[in-house]
Image (cartoon, rainbow, N blue to C red; front, side, top):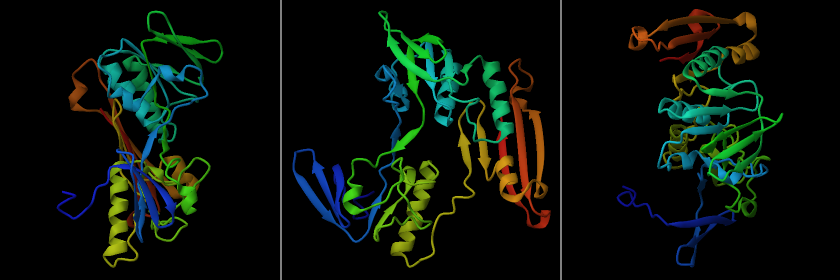
Length: 317
């Protein structure tokens, strides 16, 4: 498809030489330089590993999870975000003794309180061991190849597999941004405006590498399409609105959201201007089984009904 659309693909590792030049190191050891008036950075992210933790190399990351050749009998998943919760649900459903380790009071703490409460209820019901307010100090490999994860407060758990799912980081550290003068924040995320412009004219960024972005593939694709429309199809005001992006977490049970959570709406518009409607039920799919899962929904409204801003937060079986 790329060749059909006259797109040249160069396989290699690229980095900026200056604001208009990319140097590509090829597999045969040679180097090729490319110049362009417009350069888009879309290098994506990679799983984060806490290199300060002794023995962290004994664990795998979310990429390694998909390379597992056998189901671990016991697993510790370290992280509180959607990747950790999704992996925990999969392995627990397949029969692994599953431990979910979070640094604060709950996983998915940025979700609406209704979502978090329901998720915690189901995690406990399904038998996932949740270790709250817990920090990993060390991972020790034992003689039988099992792993002992040592926590703070002299606690530990022994498992067969440790999965680091403590978030992702932008892959921007080895592409020579400093040679082009592209600004990043302290975590390496590239600063852009709503049009995906960096601080350097002719250099743009989309996807998991931008500051304040939403780390979802369809969002990056949508932003890239709008950028191409703006640059090459005479639509100077085309840009992606990041305020209302429907999002799904493939947890057990799954979560879907769009718009603000209730606390976010109250903070932004004031409690007196926010109306909340809730509903809960058991879906027919599990209504006649012993393993009933709750379905709960919340509609957050701001303003009068004729001109109301809406947000949906729901978790369902």
